[in-house]
Image (tube, rainbow, N blue to C red; front, side, top):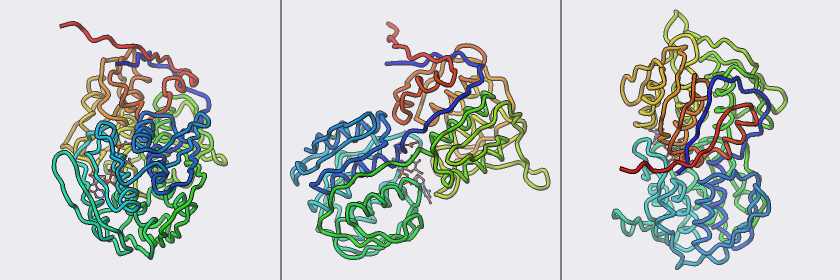
Length: 433
Ligand SMILES: CC(=O)N[C@H]1[C@@H](OP(=O)(O)OP(=O)(O)OC[C@H]2O[C@@H](n3ccc(=O)[nH]c3=O)[C@H](O)[C@@H]2O)O[C@H](CO)[C@@H](O)[C@@H]1O
Ligand SMILES: C=C(OP(=O)(O)O)C(=O)O
């Protein structure tokens, strides 16, 4: 067990290169299971969740070779219809369920142990199952241990009951290896869904409508290998933007996809943070006095997440942290997950003024001088939000359970030190009873 020990209060400045998008790397790695040819994925973030997906593929029988810090070659020729998904590894990540689409399409059967992932509310698998059923699969067994899907897939029409990100990805993965034209309506269109669709095109599927909520996939019975570069992680970029604003420093975030940042920049501006686009970089000017923009008629501002291109759910915790340092009042409405805002009590223990109206809504009043505390990281993004708070708090904060932060942010302590932070990773010894 490790913890972070942070001495807060220093402005963080300098430049940082964002890691590859975690939520794109995971489905793109799962896509390697669709073919017996070699697939090379580049700009892969070296985070715990990626390692779990790589371990899952290896356990299934794929060969995996790291060819550089961020480049991995996978050959799934060794995966057979008898390969089994390891339940222990599956429980480590939500994205383990993305192996269902490839296994079902390739072998006509997928025996899936329950996935893991952040505990941030109920996480439905129904949209995935609806999609597989629309392509001709049946649920053969579903008990607390496993969910077994079976059937030779045929192209069809999928109408998602909600634009589920991984549900859309599983439908895409399955449809790419199913001959004929499949249409997905009410599809999710997050940058990671786009990334996966582009990779599947390079593997031999024909996909129209990429980036929209209607996808037409002409699948094939054999997909080939490819080399694919993962795009920059817009959630990590948003986290660095908030970090600059909260600490008062100037940070340049390099090599981004500015078009993917439009809603994030718009919402952060509402919370009081100005950012500029300079070529492919985002510049957060230093020394900003953050003031919340009120709505017309002096009404309270609201930040609400939603499916793309709305503000990403994975940045709501970061938005709460940012709002603690901005003058005024913001209502953060985390509409998608029921438990994600429970972490606000960690910020409250550090001195933030937050009124938790109900599980979905928190009213944040700023600015508040934050003070050091001992806190645990409940999930990836809450962990990062608490880390941002610690970086601008007075005194020495300790954050436990940092495995959660390591699930989604690569070498975050080293990268923060390069920006001037005082942060140490320290082994934590259990206290004897
Ligand atoms: C590995 C991965 O990629 N994980 C991401 C993925 O999870 P995941 O794919 O599991 O999330 P989903 O998009 O399926 O759903 C997210 C939540 O929002 C709810 N919902 C969704 C759409 C909608 O119109 N109405 C609605 O209520 C769902 O019921 C669920 O509770 O997408 C989430 C939403 O962007 C992100 O937080 C996760 O980081
Ligand atoms: C919720 C997240 O991840 P997962 O879906 O893998 O739990 C996240 O990335 O914030």
